[in-house]
Length: 341
Image (cartoon, rainbow, N blue to C red; front, side, top):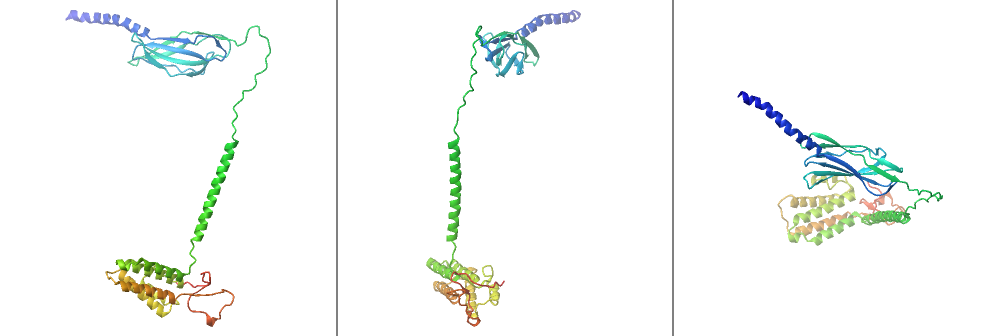
C-alpha cells in the first residue's frame, strides 16, 4: 500500500511530460499568412490582400476589424471569411481585404494579429508576417512633355421635359374628369327633383298600387299599407300637420285644429281605421273592399285638390274670394302656409 502511494506522484509527472509536447504541438498547428496579388501596381490600384489562417477542425477564427487607415494602406472593405477543409484534416479560414496605396514606393503591411478559439473556448493568438508591396509611378522617366488637363467627364443627359409635360397633362385630365363627374352628378340630382304637386303625386301612387293587383293574390296587408301611407303623406304635405308619425287617435285630435272640412276628416279617419283593422289584426277583407278603399282614397285627394292660380301676383283676389282649400302657384310652390304642431 505504501509503495502504491509512492507511484501516484511518479505517474502524474509522467503524464504531464507526455501531454506537454502535445499541447505545444496543438498550438503550433495554428498558422496565419498574408499574401498580395502579383503584378505591377500603380497609384490608386486595388490591392487584394488574402489572409489565410490554418487551424485544427472545430476552432473558431475571430477575424480582425481593420481601421480605414491601416498604416500606409487605405482599407476599402473586408469581405466575409470563408472556411475550407484541407486534405490533411485541418481547416483554413480565408478573408480578402481590399486596400489602396496613393503614393509610389515600397511598402510593407503592418502586423496583423488573429484570435483563435478552440473547442473549449480557450483563446490563442497568431500573427502574420509583414509582406512587401511595391507601387509604381504612372510617370515615365525622362518624359517632360506638358499635356492638357483632361476635360470634365460627360455625364449622361436625361431629358425630363416629356415626363413633366405628361404629368401635368395627367393632372389636368384628372381634374377635368372630377369636375365633369361632379357637374354631371349635380345635373342628375337636379333632374331627379320631383316638381309634381302633392295631389299629382298621390294620384300617381294610387294608380301604381292599383296596377300591382295585390288583393287578387290575397296580399291585403301590403295593399292597405300602401294606400294608407299614400293618403297620410298627401294630407301632411297639403295641410302641413304631422300625420306619418302619429296614430289614428292623434290624427283625429289634430284634424280639429286644421282647415280640413268635417266631411273630408270623417272619410280620412274612416279610411285609417279600416286600414288599421287589416294591418294590425287577423281580419281579412274581400277583393271588393280592397278596391273600394282605393276609390275612397282617390275621392279624398280629388275633393282636397288645391286651386291653381294662373298668374300669381298679378290680380290678387279679394278677401271674400279667397278659397278655403290650399292654394298653390303654377310651379307647385305654396305662397304662404301656416304650420301647426
